[in-house]
Image 1 (cartoon, rainbow, N blue to C red):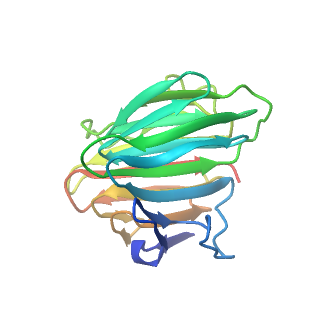
Image 2: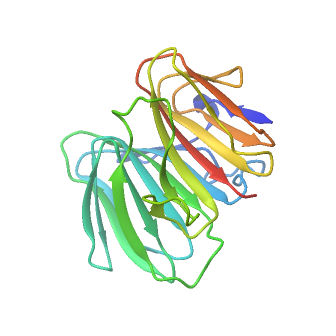
Image 3: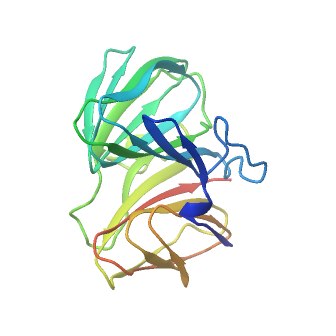
Length: 234
């Protein structure tokens, strides 16, 4: 099963400084049929105006992944971490037993991010924060595991949930396959470009909820098609 969720049908909130699209129910956007997808609770598509951002606030027991599509986000937290995560970078904050953090756009252009929240399968761990590059220039047609809760995925940012966050950049006409297995579920969003997913067309920033698919067949219809995929245990 692949359920396409077009960008124009996502939840929308305009706060002046923040233009947000919600793949799932969040804040004042409520859709009882879209409360999440398995352990995936939030996928927000945020545009943050220059000189603004999310002031210091708390989290706990949540794995929060941010992919910066344009601009820069500056992270500060109660652990003493400060990080400037730019376009093409990914950061992971494991809230664990509790953390306070802020995320601001201190630049002169809007910052565009995907913010992804996954419910942990493990609790009681210490909070943490880390960042790494998205495989934007590596157009080999193979997914890169950016973050993972599977110990065998060496080099990935650690998650405390049985999920993988993967990234892929493809050239127009390039094809690839990914085998999640029918026992798993996924959620896929093109950050840029258009692709075919098992014969269905998905445009930029639209979502695809995936279940019971043994193989995913992908073909890029545009150059520099960027794809983010969360592969999860139900």
